Length: 279
Ligand SMILES: O=C(O)C(=O)C[C@]1(C(=O)O)C=C[C@@H](O)C=C1
Image 1 (spheres, rainbow, N blue to C red):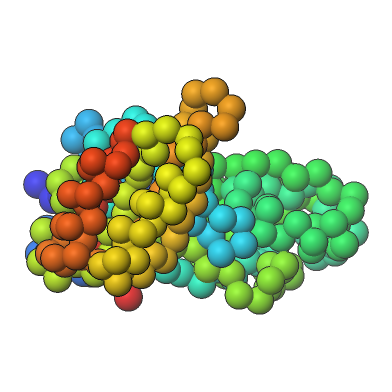
Image 2: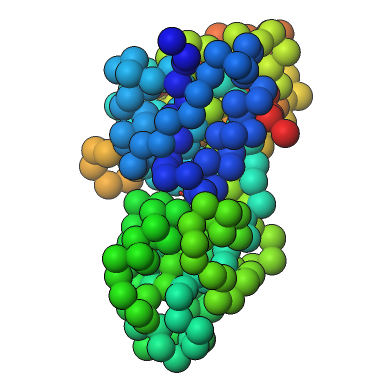
């Protein structure tokens, strides 16, 4: 039986494109197949429970920031490892069977895509209401049952899978729009040449210099951070956890030293895994 890589479906989503790319780089590619699932929680839970072997989920967008559900589930709810990352350029188009923008009264898409086209929607379709869909391609698929006057925001590529014309191409608010996808599995990345590591940590107590000391550990080992973000610890207000990505793989001697020291300085230290970029 083939191993399964789950992605946010149906086919034609950005996640599908990212998953197709990852599939080619997995060890023994021909032993793998893709499976569409409807939401990010479905994907991560299926990986954790073992009904699929790996999952591909969006983690961060250059315009809208972190995909909170992904990081929250990885930090608080599941024991999974990031095994790889891949970055896609995002180029949103407006799909519709209508040929006139003035006829559009409803626009469907994934909330991230709607947010990334906020100015276009405000300026060109002020009359339209926006409805969330589970994914961009699901929004295009749903147009078939929605009647005239509806439109969907999705990737140009979606055109290949659904018989819906592009009414307006390139509707994103910013010319550079990228989403970083994470490949997650139940075990650490099997490759020895990992280049990045993602950590979640919480300070022992809120005191002057606490975070500075944590960051000092990376500086001392000359390890570059590529991301730091605080998220609510899901307790009282003002209580945060920190997501840190750094440019050091698991066999980096400096990283091992940083992890040993952080164990002593933090109330929570979760290693989400070391991995490489998939291009
Ligand atoms: O709906 C899709 O096509 C997705 O793959 C999801 C998703 C996301 O969650 O960020 C991926 C890339 C874009 O940023 C918009 C939507």
